[in-house]
Image 1 (cartoon, rainbow, N blue to C red):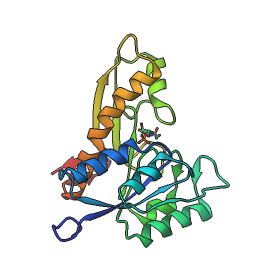
Image 2 (cartoon, rainbow, N blue to C red):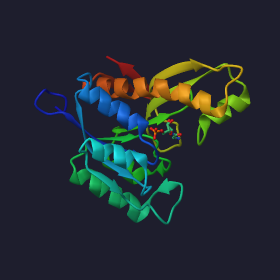
Image 3 (cartoon, protein in one colour):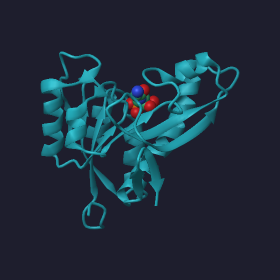
Length: 209
Ligand code: GAR
């Protein structure tokens, strides 16, 4: 059992950017509404804000080079990330703005235990800059999705989605900021459900029990 009171679910976070989603998870933990432990934060970007945020909260933080690939995590870099996650005893991998496609090696090392947050209502607008895709398409409702990661890109079973309206005067930045507010609610909530053992995979549907 990983969710008993004596043993908190151990989470490894991977991110490439500012780390506001990890911050929301930290805030929920420190605020007493989320009973998990972040055991490490790993980034493919040496100066990433996510590493600085982790350090401010005494969470081990490491830049791990993922070259030679630019958009995926594969080969020796994948092995390096897996061994670091295992070294810290991570049980769940949380992708929080990690701008690389993860491959089978990581998924095999953490079966049904890799989560991602995507800034769109999947299956619409997969890939990068999803909020821009939504704005350009002209949708009236946008949002975010937390999902289990599978071998595809942004195709895994959806755990939680939250919506926001798209305003007539939205810019890419204002829409992304509104979506991020919902991301910061959705990710802690998804982890709360996971840690409580309430997420049950039925085919590609995630049922909350
Ligand atoms: C978030 O909006 C997240 O949804 C997005 O990157 C941002 C990271 O922000 N992820 C993707 O686009 C993945 N395809 P953060 O570093 O402040 O958490």
